[in-house]
Image (cartoon, rainbow, N blue to C red):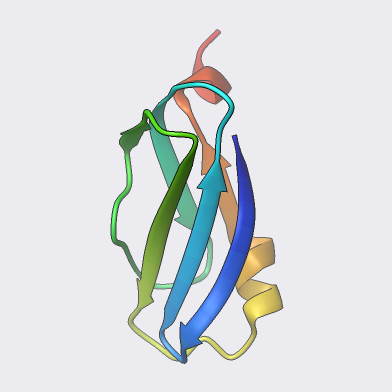
Length: 80
């Protein structure tokens, strides 16, 4: 499971492209330090590619800063 692309659509909206080689259960995204919401979160990824949009409540001044704050987890990352 990996992030394959991040694009700033406008000053408060970021598009995130995801790719997985297998089914990923409970995909969870987090952008530490950014207030807002993801268009989808805590979902099952059953297709190889997915697109998720982050809607920030404040202006995103640096795409690099947003990208470095982004974490991606699945059930396999938290299970023993």
